[in-house]
Image (cartoon, rainbow, N blue to C red; front, top):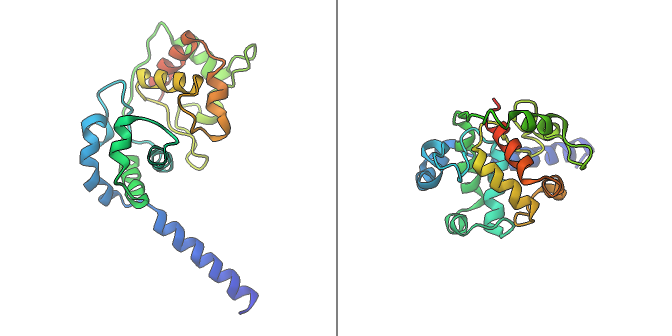
Length: 201
């Protein structure tokens, strides 16, 4: 086999593997009915303690589902839901939710000033990095890097997530990035940032 043929074969396998790993939104929709009980129709959760999945990046959703199944992220309700899912099922669900239109929240006006200050500039005195660096100016995240969209997410859910990272209850973040940031934040700062993110779009 020539060098060119070898390279072509490797590229073909890589492309085929990528295509196989891609989710099928139609198949995901067929499995998403059970998710609606907590996450709402099309992933638009109405319970502020359960995250909105509509419009979230597929890569992020698939990783969270895999982490629940592997025990890297813990939640009794989710553990039962993911137990019977294959990797392809997870990719399909992720593709379905990613295609749904995101919905916006509304920030608490009394928390916007502090929330915006930390989100956009961090807190250098405490070593808190600016959220905008990973999640972007509108909270849209960074799909290739696996950083989630946070704009429009329920503030109550974001508060829980940040406190879970702060207390290492949740430890499935890449290189401990979120634990490092949240560990330096007070309750007041977490609540302000969560509220601010809820109104981003």
